[in-house]
Image: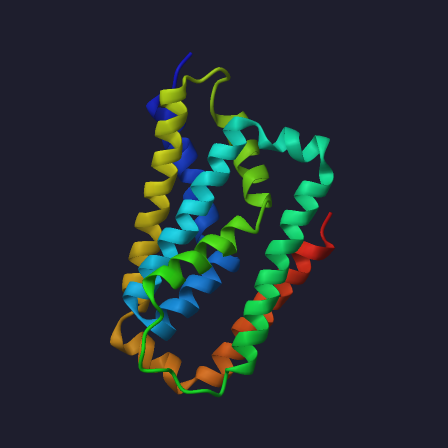
Length: 202
């Protein structure tokens, strides 16, 4: 049995619910966009979406079996992601009172940072694996798997693109600038907490 449209729509509904829920990715692209503008936000979204789609591909390829056979690989990846989130949190806290720079964040750097935020969360792959088992039939052809992964990537790009466009408006940026010390420290606290949660969760 191959891929069907209802399967794909159900997959997209679950993904949209997951994307809309608060988390490190949502928090990071929000701060990047209001701090550095729409292009930085868009590039961050491409990085986040690329990593998420690659985790879905990894789920199809059975990477969870590797994590089961070699638990240290999962732990190492999770700790690396947690360390990155905590590092971002520390830098954000330390620079909370610094004014915004005139030079926007380079697109390549924004993309890489978004990629690392989601690449360092192997739970994304476990989530994708659970969704795949529930929604899709077994034995999908390679072209069906490629279509699902491409669909996932495009959905992430559209979602984050719309979010970056909305958050880069003049009022949103002005509001951020006026409350930057407070907002940055809230963001730093939440990112740090998410990093610690990754470390402490089994």
